[in-house]
Length: 486
Image (tube, rainbow, N blue to C red; front, side):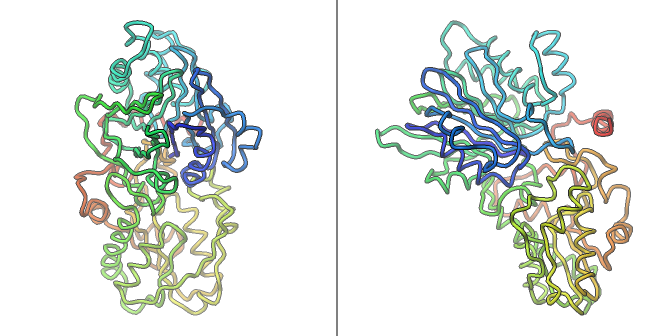
């Protein structure tokens, strides 16, 4: 999971890209970077570890010249803190010069690494799949060129061949020196990518492409639409938009975890309001709670701030039980799900949340969280509720049990790390230390997200083990797990 943004303006874009990354900070706090390009084709790039406000100084911003640019905020998907060398954007100097950012996870990195070295004769300096992607794009762009000049059709031919070679999830934005901005999305549209525009003073148009719609809304851009699965979007330096479907058999199957946890509630993705989807999750979860918990065992409903709040409000409303805020959140601590390592996550829970004893003492509490992944955070929160005086603790997840690795860009690579893997729900309740445990049903989650939309399918692989790209094998999962242990 990462946040990406690209802009084509009629004036300097450095500040607006910076502001956009602040809005996307929830998608990754490990490292960040911005690249801009002048009309002459000269790139300017700065990237560093840490959050956006930590990474950029005034001198860095002043050096980011140009009316076209892109930005990235990242969290490592391998369970450890990333090195600065793997911070994005990535750059290659031929053809023309390309800078690229990427949100997702490639699942055929072994094959691509071998092809790039032995067939394409390209050098890789990191283990980042983004470096793989930019080199595949560069090679195919070079192969598409009919002469010295580059036109949109040649760009689209290159993206078509990228789709043929690359497997997994990817939403990508690239700058091509002297030509413009390219954005493309994998043939399943697993990771989000949205286009926006606004008129400039000279009658031309400015453009933005980003992971979430809130970027457009906060910067005065009109949302045009989502980039379609398999589609490529090319915006030239004059602000002209060119688009083409570059995949043979595209099918929109977006990641359900975006709606559960990753995206901000004020975003709209693939025509679905994240906030309204979370409300519907609460509606359906309430029915399951009523079915599996004894009457009279819940006095109050409390959310685990922040992403579970809409679901918790709906649970309380539908069950007719009082809604209370029992946890105070320290907003200066990052999201624990994307913290590197179990020990860091465990420590950060109590730094991030404080239980107010006045809300817990002597009460039977129902805690609602968006999901339960490793169980580290949930276990700590349940213990905090008991320490604050709760009489009993019922814990409910707005998402189903996470039983399978997520290989499309979420940090769930190992089955052994998942608290639900190989355990029944009563066994998980014992592991977490709660009195009762309730999970959302798989079909209820799917229905809550799809309701009222044009979508007909979702990637729910971490819940049901069905990998939508059809290329994820048991051997690959074992290799990924082995890579985490080494």
